[in-house]
Amino acid sequence: MGEGCFRFASSLAGTNEQTEVKSIMNILVINAGSSSLKYQLIDMTTEAVLAKGLCEKIGIGGNITHKTQDGYKDEHAVDFPTHAEAFEEVVRLLTTGDHAVIKDASAIGAIGHRVVQGGTKFSASALVSEDMIAAAEEFSDLAPLHNPACIAGIRACQKVFPKDIPQVAVFDTAFHQTMPEKAYIYPVPYEYYEKYSVRKYGFHGTSHRYVSARLAQLMGKPIEELKIVTCHLGNGSSIAAVDHGKSVDTTMGLTPLDGVIMGTRCGSIDPSVATYIAEKEGMTIAELNNMMNKKSGVLGVSGVSSDNRDVSAAAASGNHRAQLALDIQKYEIKKYVAAFAAAMGGVDAVLFTGGIGENDQNVRLGVCSDMEFMGIKIDPELNAKFSGQEHEISTPDSKVKVWIVPTNEELMIARDTLEIVSK
Image (cartoon, rainbow, N blue to C red; front, side, top):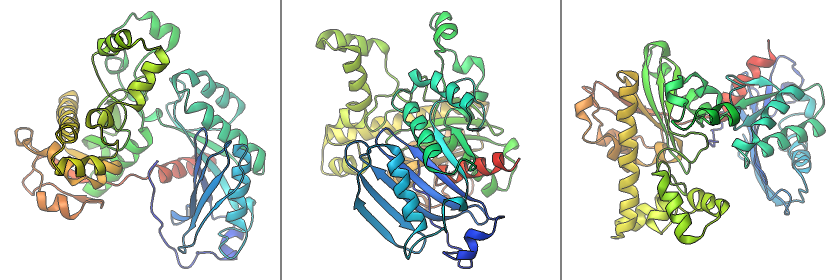
């Protein structure tokens, strides 16, 4: 999830009145991992982030970093046997001491959870219930590292927070449920789709939905009139074709391994590459899966790092493999931009988001260079000047507009949560 930004509301910041006015909806956004959880408390009257933080090493010790809107930061070790103890510490930091942002847990109006895999059952966010949890558990095989952790986070919240606080699940896959069959069905025997739900699901949907809607606002046009290629580029990267506000294709597939080269993931390769290497090296399926997910991508090619900043520094010093990794990255993204324009029958805008997309001007320049044939003309000076900021970076005569749009998945989750609990 993106870091998000603090936005200050001086009339509300840290006042007791804020916690007592029932019309103010404070949404707690949760992104739970197997041994971690990120959180943000957002006041939805202003969409200001009151506090945010990260709990780490759950089950193997414990550490928390907590920040508030007034600039206060607290980092300390604390024992987290389970997610429940982590949430108890979060509540303590939110509600006690000189830097408390709410009076008590009852000042939280609702809790929104990021859930990675919603399968075919969820095309939109949903109120948490036992039926919803059971449905999410059905798809745990498709996201074994993520869904069980997400469900553990929900269960821990149910244990720690008052039962009258509603909870909402926001699914990474939901936005991509509008893809047509021709985009999501794999050309393997159809029985595997029927028996095991093997198909393309796509991920980063909350981010693609947020940035495409935000771009439409920035361009002053209804999203229903736009064809947008959204490039969410980070350690995990995915590209989506958003046609009139709906996802019609995306690069990630059954799992987040598919698509463009990523920090440690190989992205799309000839499947026989995997079986050939496994046979030569005597790898098990688990070892092969680990190699493709954790030892490949930019790290595997460069031999330097999975971080674009480190690899760029190595390339600048003459490291050929580092430069090759960066060249592959830009080349693959460029191909998907053109492919998705073809899939939509045209494109009005290309946007970059995510840690790399927002901050790496060289990646953006490399992707958009030599694309005049399809109406893309990037302005190198704007591209450099506004790196990391919300801004158009194409030339005035570019038929296809190019933008940087920082993502805010937490805010999107909070908005969905507020909408559902307000019904």
